[in-house]
Image (cartoon, rainbow, N blue to C red; front, side, top):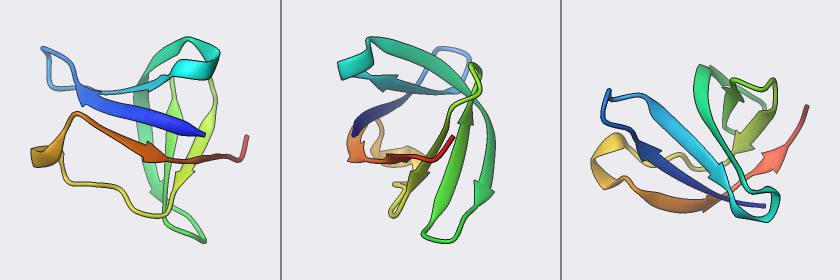
Length: 67
């Protein structure tokens, strides 16, 4: 699924999933088998093979929902 990542005014990473009309704060970042795993405030875990650095945000990237 395509996920847009951006920083809000407070500097917190925000993930937006357009197909689900879902916008949540990222509460945790961990390393997974295929790359980085971001845990959202609603409990979703999204795995990214390539996570861009914060200098290139906002950006849309491909992610896999694992939980």
